[in-house]
Image (cartoon, rainbow, N blue to C red; front, top):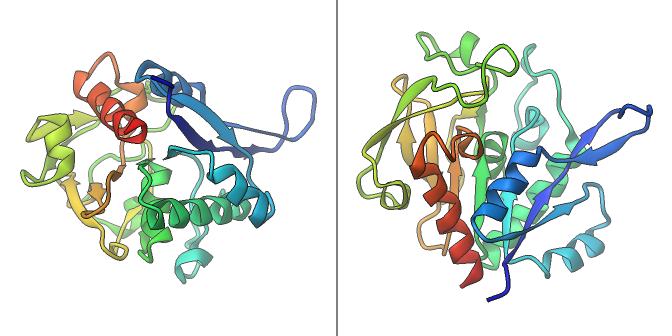
Length: 242
């Protein structure tokens, strides 16, 4: 069986070691997809719309990766003073891809920033800064390198009737956490599927589609520590291959 091709939109990195602008993704996403049997394809941001559509036509699935904050202009909000690093070009690219993939019922897995971007692409809004807007709150922003990538931060509770629960096979589990923003109002058709103890939406899905799932944590860093996370990638890749 050929490996399904999974697109991962790149982040823009200002400068590499040679002082040149580059685009890329963290290698852990690529490795997680490969372990699940997929062929990852890095998607440049800022392509012209027709070129992006040509590229999308070759994708069996889309992975929306972590990264910087989603620019609040895309969900009609005033910028919070703690919303600092944004990349509108990446936001535009990912929003277009997400809407096209959902409209064509192709699988989408959204992780951390991607979870938030998925919500925005479908008309939802975001909490821009959990520590200042949600009190009391769990310790969500445990950023690397102060915290290990696989450090478990808090528990999440899963909806028993959700697809996410069916995949992970756990009513609750501990996850890592590297975010200061979160889903606020859900986008069109999205259903919450997992919550942190403070009420933050940690998982969501789009019923009626083959596979549209978002998680706020980083399962790609927990493949060996938490076996359920492997099942998430395997389910996504299996649906993309179908």
